[in-house]
Amino acid sequence: MTTTNNQSQIENLTLVDGNTIPILGLGTYKMSDEEARESVAYALELGYRHIDTASLYGNERGVGAGIADAVEKGVVKREDVFVTTKVWNDAQEPQATRESVQASLERLGLDYIDLVLVHWPVESQGAFGQCFDTLLELKAEGLIRSVGVANFYPEVLDQLSETPVVNQIELHPQFPQDDQLADDRRRGIVTQAWSPIGRATYLDGSPIAEIAAELDKTPAQVAIRWHLQRGVVAIPKSANRERIRENFEVTDFALTDEHMDTIASMARADGRMSADPRDFGNE
Image (cartoon, rainbow, N blue to C red; front, side, top):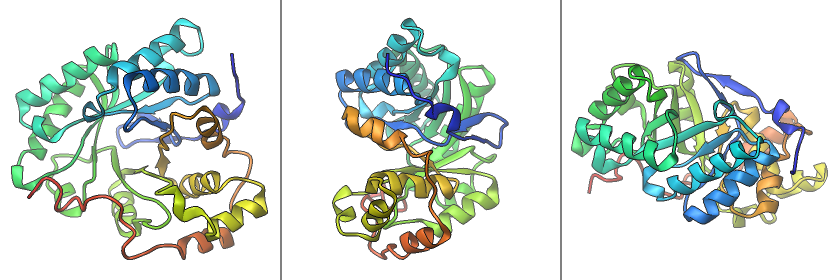
């Protein structure tokens, strides 16, 4: 069994509801069930304790199987693993939200989910608040430990009945989301970065690559370390074992203030890679 000492060095952030979340996790977007099972089991052996999936990804069975494999081998106990999933846009009405979570629990093979997010606000549907409130009900029933959101912005955060614990947003060095990060902090929300490295091709020849060469690290490791030092939860996705390991080996070095300033200079007005949440689903 592969082991690492890194897990004890991965910080846990305290959420507004008193629960904690590991600041580094494994993303599983676009993985098949088989890839997710193998990647999750391997990541847990390495020391990861935070796994992110979603109903949309179609791999919750694989994620759950990977966790079950690790539990069966004695690598982890269920309570050691922080599991996140999300409710898709077509399931924001109360009954549909309940059915979505129940289906996720069944596919994951779990009795509870650590964190469930409203995947996108989709303001034109007018149901994101109902979805959020239904998740709070499911939390009170013991099926969910924490409730959060993804891709939310101030105008929709203002409309929620209480503070979500997490806001998972597109965030990477070319799109640092300084304003949304500050808004989340003001509210007591932990910001989580999806696509924390961004399109890796931009790293070649970049200031991050120069910092990586200086520190004898990879550009991806420097990008992930940048998130951790900003207090942002990062969930880099990879089904490649070498990359999964590489992305976890980020606790034995630190970026200087000068490094952080250099990376901040990489921000671009057109840095967003995905849809603007204000528009997504509203067409």
